Amino acid sequence: MQKFIYLFLAVFFYFLSACEQNHVAPDPTLIIEPVPHKILGRDTIRSGNYAGLTIGSSAAETYQDLKKVNSPTSINYLNLVSNIYTDLNQLRDKLPLYHNMYFSNPEARHAGIQINFEAGKVKSIFTNEGKKLNKWPVGATNVNSVQVNDPVTIIFDKLVKIKAKPQYAKTFSEIMLLTKDPDKAYDNNMSQLPQWYFSYKLEGRKWDEVQLIFKAGKLGSINLTHFESPEK
Image 1: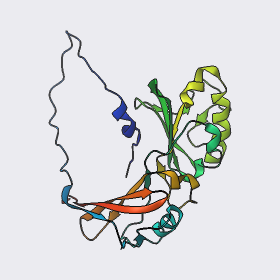
Image 2: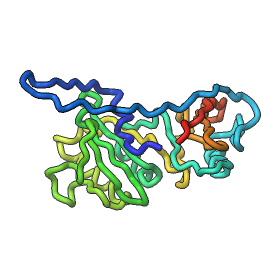
Image 3: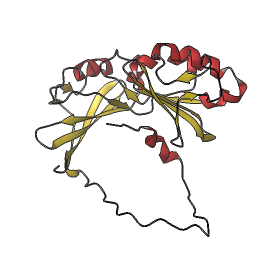
Image 4: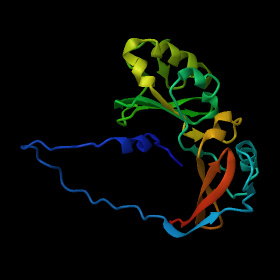
């Protein structure tokens, strides 16, 4: 669903490009814009349930109900709003529960890093500027850097070592865990978050974007945006 999630953080930046005065531009290439998904309508549910998710349930109960959601395709990604940390030690047992992590210094977001996980290992590493890396920090030894194919279970200890170096300490000022793996255990901090959201496949080309709105740790409402995908 979010193959290159580093684009999510690009909203924090403005990229300017300029052509040199004597540069000869290549022949123009025809670019065909993708056909957008059609919005069919919107609904808000404030009582009852939707696809097995019940208004008034606790966050922990809602998370368990997600595993029972009846859909032609399973829910592989659960996006979380405002799941932000300022203390790396809080993440000791959390990283294996997520698909990715972002960390950066709010005063220099371009220097931030995104690490993506898949099948219990580091799948990819990107800078917030979109540059793909094989390891980070780039010039560090393998023992003192996070590398592609590292088991997720050893990442926390590596990050602690990296953060201890003065030149990288501020990079961990803001840490975000935004995409939960719903097949993994519940994270207790999820009860403190205002919103979760995911895509729910319906029949044919129809699907819903489902926003779960929480108040005081309970499911208060469900916002639905109904879509229809373009024909292939």
